[in-house]
Length: 448
Image (cartoon, rainbow, N blue to C red; front, side, top):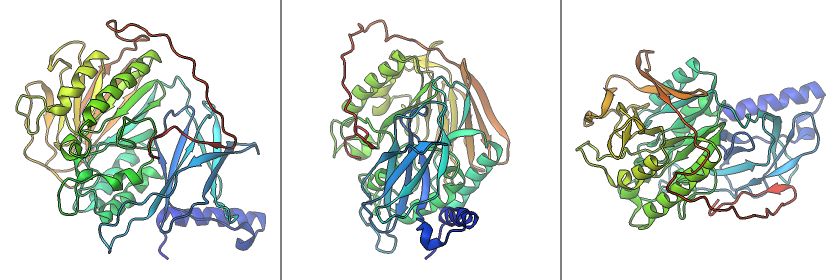
């Protein structure tokens, strides 16, 4: 059996504890798991999500969690093992499990372990929830990581982490891999992302290459969906493809812009998604959250020809309505920063759109500078990454080449509105009774 780095370290940690306690391996009944990963959770102050993998399906896994220093534990909701269809008999994907730890206390240290009904358990892993009003932290942002050699993506990840080990979580803006059905590419992406996923949570964004078949035709992104148990509460028919989450006082939305690839399977995709987005941003505003939207495709045709594409036609009016200060995009493998835009025109109270370049091997010389671009840079020479610094009054975005050269830095002022837009009447909230289950906290979800 070949151990990946994380499984090896897990074994070492368990056996070190056993040695101190004078325990044998048989007595401890240690459990090893592959590719233990932190995923972004619904609310960083009150929840935690993890995933792991195995080559065979197991239905008796559980996750026990408790406040550190106590012995009163609860069990998390664990998904059934998920494996995408096997598209290549020589590269068979593993089963992926997700566990949702919920109803946590803000700014509190917890610990968890994975076990099974055979009595095997991992060691304890600790984490600390954030403060509810956290308004100062850093995020790492990576553009398209699709590659011929995923070691280049790994170099970008390593460089970014070495320089930013204070980052709270990281985002990959879609096109994680070049082909969504090629498991060997996902395996290489995971291996090279380990420097990040071993330390901080991951927030994925769905790209168009996740929706390609081995024959390079449009295909449903089953592999992407199986791998990432992101927060629940998606639009109809889009579980794990579109989602949102809170990290401190900022509300993030990860949109699905794969209408071209997926609309024949889901003709109502964009209508359902834009309706969900409107309600999602309205609720975030009511809670006093600042807003950031992440979408793989930009809202304009690609290459740019002066017109909105179908995603921009649907989504931009909602961004304008709720005064979203920042939208991050990808797809064109270039870095762009626009002037504030509203109704597709420059406006002082508009949205700044930032395209995030590329973090893998694949460059593209087909992108075009827009009239509204303050900065345009095409990283043909080397990959790049961004840092997003959340501050109490603004967002600061800085773009770097892998050699450390700064491409651009900008500060975007943010405002928080505690009510819905003026054109909407505030509706009285209905009382909702929550059902409380003992031991297992199951998230509301369509398809998890």
